Every structure is written in structure tokens, then in C-alpha cells.
Length: 158
Image (cartoon, rainbow, N blue to C red):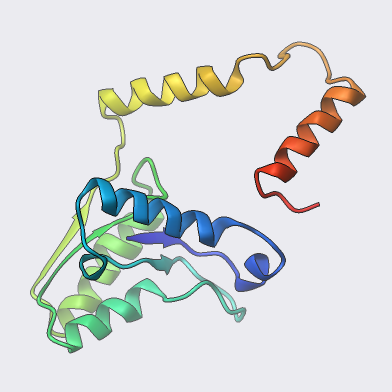
């Protein structure tokens, strides 16, 4: 399961993203009835000289192929639709790296994209999350403070 990367310094400063990725992966694995040795979490799309969340996806796939893994399925659960960056980086570049390192079968699992059931679920999520929000007038100071406190409860840093 490859999630989009994030600079390590963001997590070091309190960003809950990495924990959320592992929690999502574990929930997905549970639903798919995968054992701990049947999946792993990696991070993609790093750039610049800064250290990013690890393990990195492409070097992990190369290592696994070098250790004798011949077949791999890769999913990017942090994305609800395929984007050019992920298609190129994962479906093309990582496929090439895995096969070049000795792997034989690389299967990229498409995102939900425009599936009817996903669009209906997204609509339900939006309607639920937006209910009660004033859409045509500015928030009062009290409402702004309540929103700030709720964000902090959910893991935002001050």
C-alpha cells in the first residue's frame, strides 16, 4: 500500500498523517483479511533533499524483487482517483523497477475513480460533513473558535 509521501519534519512537528496512513492500511488489510506478512506500507512522491517518510516505495519494490518476490499488487489507498503523477510513478516507473530487479508480475490496482458506488458514497460523505455549516455568511468569532478547537481535537497542530 503506497501512500503519498510527506517530509519527515512535518510528522516530527506533530502532523498525524503517517499515523493515519498506517491506521488506514491496517483497516483495509483487516477488511481484505490480509495477514501482517501479506502487506506493507510505503511512501511515494518525494522530492528535494529533505528526508521524507519511509520506507520509500520504489526502493522497497526493488529490494523485494531482489529477495525473490516474483509477484506484487500495489494499491494507493490515499487517492480516490488515479492521477498522472501516481500512474506514471507507480504504474509505470515502479513496475519497471520491480521487473528490472527480478520481479515478474506487477499489478497496479486502480483507484475508485468514477465508480458509481464511490460517487454515491462521496456524495453522502460531503452532505454529512457539510451539514450545519453556514454557506452564505461569515462565521462568528464563537463559531471560528469552535471550529479551531475541533480541528485541534482531530489532530491539527496549533
